[in-house]
Image 1: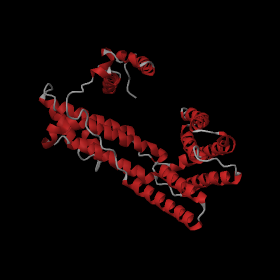
Image 2: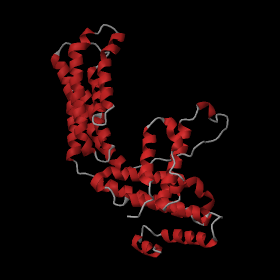
Image 3: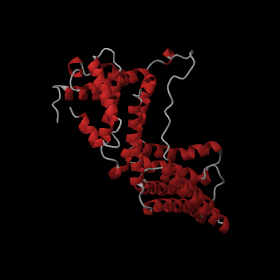
Image 4: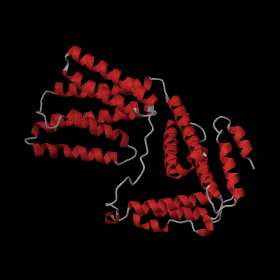
Length: 353
């Protein structure tokens, strides 16, 4: 609801046009001094554009300009978040389903059951590793069915006519091209991945050809049944998005709390190297929490703004060019923010000017 400087929207549209263009145009990324001195929101936009400019220069720099002679790490390692709840659920579901399918195949001695057990294992792991598998399951099943139909066509009409290994490569190339084109479109990218995988599995390219239609159909049906069981199981399973979203919200609070804790006198010397890492982890958790749709925690943008505010306060509290009163106010704000997760409303009231 605040008034923005005149010309800001036009300048942002111009910057967006540059970003969509060739890489060499990043040199004009700037809001200009008249806009960069505006409200804090505009100042942050200007700083972000400068970071984009620096990243563009580093990304498209000449390889010969890189420093290949010095030793030591060039960047700090950002440890990925370990979602133990998702790992437990995925492991139990995929392991139990695969064990049951393998046991049925071993007990019946049915050759196609081996391929079905393999499909159940793959599809259970793929769907189980997603925050909302119910949304992906129908797309996965459609891609599997399309890939299997293409494999049936290949095995019955193309594979018997392939005389050599180079001919095998040429024979599968049109199917791979179709799958690659489907992968390039956002609308078909998800099912196209399963189309490619299931075609390569079910086509059995390189193996001896068979002219028995029943064998081809049974082998192909095994993958469809596996995909149907895995997809149907995830559609019928109770949704766990609320639990995972709550875990993501907890991780976001922990990240912000850790950023505030870096202000302690014992941690001041080591705060700067870790500030960007904490912000990156916060962004990862915000992105992960946003995947849960309606179950996503409220106020994700506010959490991002709070993280930026903490970083700005840290910088201000250590800026020797600022007055003592200004640094003291920044330190007081950081001290009061330490209890934001236990009493958010009380902290907000105390911080109100």
